[in-house]
Amino acid sequence: MGLTDKEHRSFLRRIARRAMIEKGLLPDFSDEAIAELAGIQTPAVTDGEKVRDLRNILWASIDNDDTRDIDQLTAAQAMSGDSVMILVLVAAADVDAIVKNGSAIDDHARRNTTSV
Image 1 (cartoon, rainbow, N blue to C red):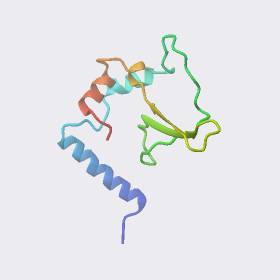
Image 2: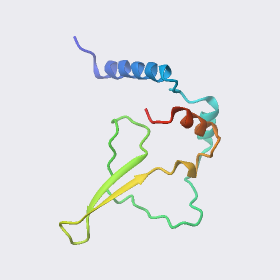
Image 3: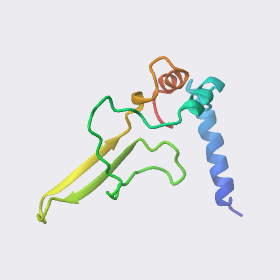
Image 4: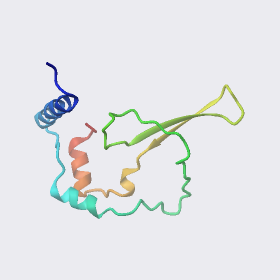
C-alpha cells in the first residue's frame, strides 16, 4: 500500500529539512525574523519611480503548487497586432525595497543563500 498524498508530502518535507540542516541551512525562521515580518504592513515605497499596475497580465510561475516563495514571474504577449513578435516579461521580486540590509530576515536569507 502506497503513501497518501499528505503522507508523501510530509515524508519529503522531513527529508528536505534534514538535508537543509546537514548543509548548514536554516529551515526555520528565527523569532526575530517572524517579528520583523509581522511588522511589514504595507507595500514598498518606490522613491518617486513610476509604478505600473500589471495585474491584468496573465503571469506564470514555475513553482510547486504549495510554494510560499514566488519571487519570479513570467508572461508572454503578442506585440500589438503582430502574430510573429512576442514580448516576454519577467517580474522579479525587489526584496530590498522592504527587507533592510542586516535585518533578521536578511540574515536568514544570507545564511540560506537560496530558496529551498
